[in-house]
Amino acid sequence: MRTSLSENTLHVIAKIYTDFSSKFGIPRQSGLVPELRGEIVFESEFRRPEAILGIEEFSHLWLLWEFSEARKENWSATVYPPRLGGKEKKGVFATRSPFRPNSIGLSCVKLEEVILAGKDAPKLIVSGVDLLDGTPIFDIKPYLPYADAHPEAEGGFGQAHKEDCIEVIFPQELLNRLPKEKRQAAWAVLAQDPRAAYNKQPDYVYGMAFAGFDIRFRVEGNILIVCDVVPRTEDFQRIK
Amino acid sequence: MRTSLSENTLHVIAKIYTDFSSKFGIPRQSGLVPELRGEIVFESEFRRPEAILGIEEFSHLWLLWEFSEARKENWSATVYPPRLGGKEKKGVFATRSPFRPNSIGLSCVKLEEVILAGKDAPKLIVSGVDLLDGTPIFDIKPYLPYADAHPEAEGGFGQAHKEDCIEVIFPQELLNRLPKEKRQAAWAVLAQDPRAAYNKQPDYVYGMAFAGFDIRFRVEGNILIVCDVVPRTEDFQRIK
Image 1 (cartoon, chains in turn cyan, brown):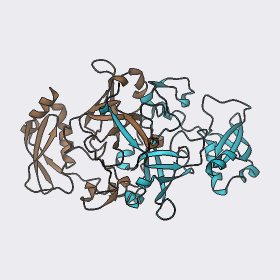
Image 2 (cartoon, helix red, strand yellow):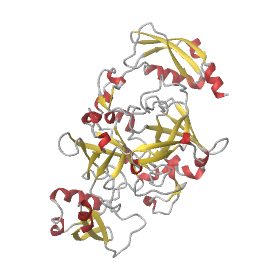
Image 3 (cartoon, chains in turn purple, red):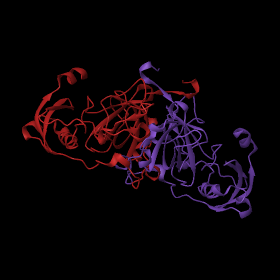
Image 4 (cartoon, helix red, strand yellow):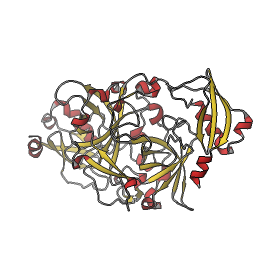
């Protein structure tokens, strides 16, 4: 039962453009892969330089955004976090799962550059993104370390596998197929092990869409080996 | 111009009950007054113990909430932050001002207790609140220090007056009029200097509604002197 009092309408103020045209490979939280950049373009109603006046004084920003690809008609009280192998049940409010009563995500990104001139200006270049290409943004807030930073906080089960990293073999001739400025980010994303914790199949060739390319790899033990890099025709068509 | 694509409807999942029946005195960010407690009561549809399963493993939580008392029909691209004396203009996305395109606030609170039995259970007791009594909550997320804690972040003008504190004289006979468990919090709130930065009138008697009492004080130089503590009839009527 929903009454008018308990409803509130949200407006998309911007969209963020990233190298991820599909979910596979997106870091599970913001900041985990600092090399990943995003470009925030305001919707026309909000595309006003004065609305970001002074934002350059902050090194980090909060983004409130829409889980646009992970909406469900009904919310579920419990979820099975991938980091727990998909086997253990947790309450939705004890997780950052996208399947929540209100589909709002929270990410902390680093502010790299404020672009004040040119097409679609003003734009914000940010890094450490964990967002799908084209994700709608509801709010941008400055990160206030005196209120927001709690390094002493206890992270519960979310922290359990924090240091998980996998060795990556990325043959030079394949790496060279990627644009120079995307290589480091691609490597860092793979090192996070994009496979979901509960879906680790030996001998399977995975494909990760990244920066307009399909990066194909398999995993042997704890080593991820890139076996092909091919342009994604569908992404180029989408951009056209 | 708003199209259906750029709209999203929010649902209130809970309300938080605090000692502030009016805005005056509420700390300007969460965590600044650790003594301030709040009780989160879920709306009936979301009042299910399994929805918070595992939440006790986290020491801190994010609350996404509605600026219910600070809504405007139209957003303004710039605001005058009180911390800058109300004289300097900043872009709304460079501030945590309530007057934003989407009226969503973000607070980090400490999880003190999970109450699983009794009336309206499950309930969450949190501390470090900066919220008005009855504030509607849209989401509760665990604080993940590995992604959310950036003590090295630069805080811009938000940090300028971080250490502002005022000396408080609270005569014992007046302090005794407050319930014992509210005294420390009241003192800490006053020490933050509840007067807005641009509204510091000498010889004026301010009244702060707190925990069902009206705490009256004046400020001489840098000393805040409590001059009366009286029960707030309107609050008691409201509770009835």
